[in-house]
Image 1 (tube, rainbow, N blue to C red):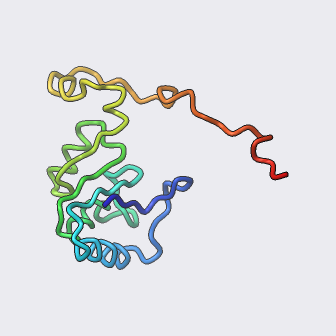
Image 2: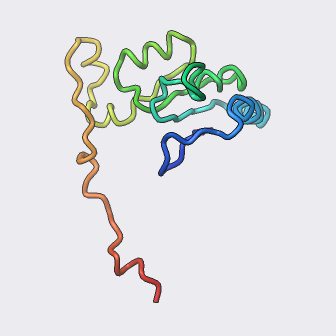
Length: 136
């Protein structure tokens, strides 16, 4: 199960009841017999609720008791390593970093610089023209 507090148009959105919502949601996912929880949070290495405290991945580990994959802005090896070393997650997804660095493991292992992700990499992006939106 992949889950996030954020919205497509609001990366900073948080669950209204904070830790209590996290407890309810992750406990329910475990009870539903999910095989793992894949958290995606804008800047997954930051606290999920408030300025201090656990990441969303750590909350999933605490309340879900299932394997956890953490995702978002973990392409920098130090961030992913810290999250894993702290026990917040079992795996770190590196997503866009892997797209622009298909040899990411080799670069990290040998200390080579990583290419930064540039959204132009995904272009052209399909767009809807104004006249296609008008209801007639």
